[in-house]
Image (cartoon, rainbow, N blue to C red; front, side):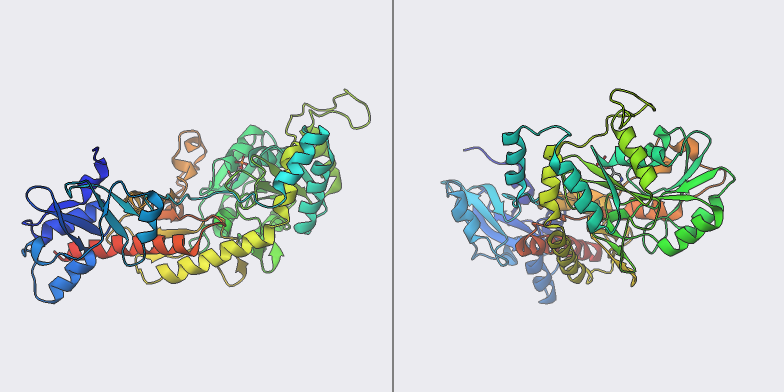
Amino acid sequence: MSHSPEIQELLITSEKTVKEALKIIDTNAQGTCFVVDASGKLIGVVTDGDIRRALIEGKSLDSRVKDVMQTKFTALPVTTPIDQIQSKISERIRHIPLVDENNIPVDYASFTRAHRIPVMTPLLSGNELKYVTECITTGWISSQGAYVKKFEQLFAEYSDMKFGVAVSNGTVAIHLALVALGIGEGDEVIVPDLTFAASINGVIYTGATPVMADIDPETWTLSPAAVEKLITSKTKAIMPVHIYGHPCHMDELMAIAKKHNLLVIEDCAEALGALYKGQHVGTFGDAATFSFFGNKTITTGEGGMVLFKDETVCNKAMVLRDHGMSKSKRYWHDFVGYNYRMTNIQAAIGCAQLERLDEFVNAKRGMAAVFNSGLSQHKAITLPPEKDWAFNGYWLYTCIIDPNGGVSRDELIEKLMKNGVETRPVFYPLHEMPPYVQYIKQGQTFPVTNHVSRNGISLPSSVTISAEEQNSILNSVSAIYNTRKLNVNV
Ligand SMILES: Cc1ncc(COP(=O)(O)O)c(C=O)c1O
């Protein structure tokens, strides 16, 4: 009989002290340990709750585990079929030891062990297969075909914009938007320090110089005050990034752009469906870019879109997307262009996803409401922002962990993983990474980005997340904090 190595992290002998049991529970992050006798046979279970009750009843940390453990508990033979094991797991019985024929624990089952909760999974159960099948049966699988135009039109309509250009991903969307708007060498473009690297990379590809600005503590997006201070005679554009689904301070940023005659390119990769004062993000600036990577609110596998205010700029972008080839003279090139085209298959998936976009955004907001209510009991956790003027799309449910609150962000990531919960740290500040250090302006500091980056964590945020999974995540977070509190009191 082979032993699962993880079981060792949950075992304690009955003669050990309560204090030692607490240490084991804190390390394994499961909120429980299994008690064995000197010969290794299973004789009890002890949870953080049992210990708390025992301490209240007058037992001490030096008491023996055998005096506080439960002797009536559920254990199953390791040969039990998996569905039967899972059916026994509930809110009350969160862990089941699995024993061999000699009653020696060799493995254990828990809700999340057999079932890792991913940060994000796409939902493709609508018309995706039907539309893709149509592409394949008709042979329209490349970038010609009706779905590309249809996707551009429907997407622009959804966002209350007129002109859409579908492209192969969200990174080239940024590059294409900037080039079509005439940004290049000698220009400066202000980007937030807290964003995915694609935002700044797009600027660098054009030959322009990126300028990193700190973020606002209340929304984690580009700080208008920081932007204002960074404007020089070379500044040509600003790039608000609606990070994690929360809209930027668009009134203030647009006022700055107007005052200094700057272009505005909104990076909406993470914020499809989000509203600023009731208006879709992506409709404020001269251009807006979107990503349809597999983890985005809607996906086309890989894919992106640029929305433009101006038809002439949109037409230029369409030419640049297709090698810079003239629309009126085949194989004549007026510009050095790119192949940034989206395929008909991607666009077909996009059309099917768009049909369910409102449903997806509602699901994400429902998920956020459940997390908000469950996590608000933890003083060490700052919930994601949603200003009263904002409608957060909650692309990724992201909160901040107080480093002095008993459990650090990195520790929480590690312990949640042990509970089968995948999480994600917030992006590193751009200014700390090798390619971007050179763009720091003299004397510039980024205190807000540093804080959010070091302490931010994103929880599983798929539209498919179930109430049971959310409950399990919230229970795991509570168990981690509660065990640590008992330990801090030791
Ligand atoms: C803010 C932001 N901008 C741009 C991108 C780039 O999109 P893609 O991965 O489709 O190239 C992403 C996501 O991946 C993003 O999060």
